Image (cartoon, rainbow over all chains, first blue to last red; front, side):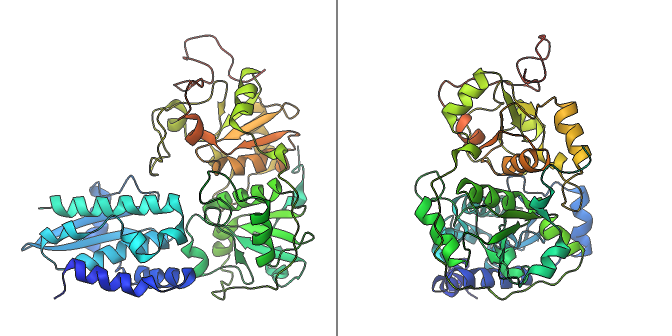
Length: 142
Length: 297
């Protein structure tokens, strides 16, 4: 199984040569692949403080560790497909990988994908904050 | 006030559905989330992004006259085109793009009342085809300074005690927060508001379905409750000038304020400036226990 780094390299490779519009289309494909919350997590949404407050859209994250392997469960508002696609990429990258590999999530992922120029400075800053948050939560998760 | 001051500045979703092929009309989408246009837009609409297209990417400013001409030319907009703006978030960014078009003096600009939200609620069709139009020879004039307030002008305006409207959330206004609830802090060093500014959060101007409130409701909010005078010069501001573009639109076109400008530098400039006056707390002028007026003279 590929490491987080290897998976991210593959994703970056998919994005890097596309033009701006194609990049957004690919991001939408990832957004559509983010599975809806299971009933268990929908119930947790109302009782646990899992909302990412530094993010401009409604984002809920659950970093889960099971037998040393990571899983990122997330819900992102439908009206924010950019954020949803980006969170989906992070979730796919870390799925079932050992917890220490959370360190491999790079803050400049957006730049590597060539998305920073498509999205502009202000939006990019918000997404970079999400990478930091996800990485930190996965590192600290028990 | 039974009707909006300039009712022609709004068009309905029905009108847009009927005119999306009209060669005299260009429909422009401007969103907070760029991927929304890719996901689906009003058939025939082009996307003009407030951040990547309309802002200069080096200097903190808008594109220059040539840059603006280029945007219009490449989107098939002529000087005579009626440009209809719409977008997500109750038309925030649509109003922002509208405002930049007015900054460059484009005559016919309108907002599709209700934006993406209403189009969706009415279950109208979305297109994923990227619209493209034959290039034009658009010529833009120099910036119309009458719609924009710069820092020094705001300082003078504030000292003269004229209308100032802070459209941010009550928590940002009081200084309790440096940014919108749930939004990232983009780096203001100080919190609070410009002395004398009344706090009229922008969402109070719109309904659940994204449309603007009625003329009567808006007049009550701005003129009666908050004592703003139509004839007195007015400046609106927020954090980066986006939410205040919507309030600027409401004041100028829906309520008929004669002289209203958007301070696009907004709190991201004021809250970082050295030596400018700032008030903390929920009162326009100073602490609530002092006897100062709640509205400008």
